[in-house]
Length: 281
Ligand SMILES: C[S@@+](CC[C@H](N)C(=O)[O-])C[C@H]1O[C@@H](n2cnc3c(N)ncnc32)[C@H](O)[C@@H]1O
Image 1 (tube, rainbow, N blue to C red):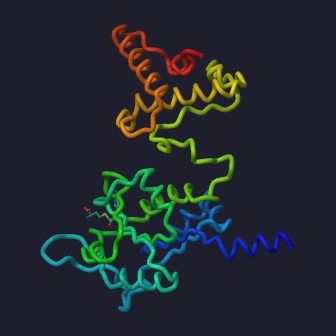
Image 2: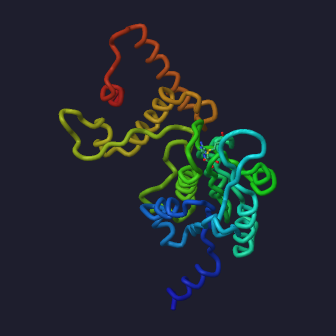
Image 3: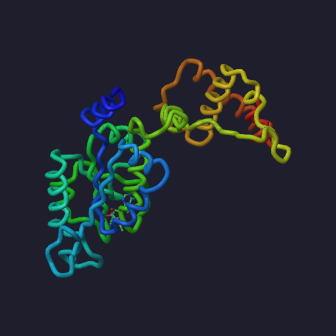
């Protein structure tokens, strides 16, 4: 009875996050969301991914989704009518507007922060472009947010859509198991994550940092924080400007900077990674 009640409670009060993807290559999105954590999230009804073939919203014999551009120039442009029809059909079955995302190299750069914002939406509708991209009226009158996954040009929007879906799904409550928390991952606090090690404790003469096998949880946490700061300082110092730092973090960073300065004065005596990770412990 208790179990029945909680199943009913779940159905009545919990709506999975819905993501509709509009594409001319549905099989790419289906394959890309049918494994690992995303598949599990779908199976657990945390996430509902629906894939729509844009050709189903065309009305001509050839199921055309693109046409020649106005004005001279090579390349085809995705037609507005099927894209508008697809979004409108999705909205009418979902009973809400959803947030329409267009994958485009001209969009705002995708980041953990953007993924976090999107993970708070109930319903995303993702448009995958091809050829020269979509008719400008789609961008102007249908799309809420334009997203770029980086400063390079891919052939189509399917890979970018999968990147966005994966990063967003990880942040939807219930997707990750308790052992896979996203809380400590890179970028969560504006820092890169600390290094990880597993068994054996010694491999080909390389030992894991002693502190990790000490069993001393407070010292391990301290080491991880320091390594996280060190990694970020070395690889992505730009992130430190916006990171959430404590006074203790600032002190560690100052010490790391002085260590670095001392090392560069002493050229040729740079520590190995193993020595660096074991430093002070
Ligand atoms: C060949 S690209 C079109 C590029 C477009 N002519 C331009 O210069 O901005 C085709 C489609 O791939 C997708 N795409 C390519 N690179 C992308 C990126 N870096 N981020 C997001 N989507 C991208 C978009 O959906 C785009 O409409």
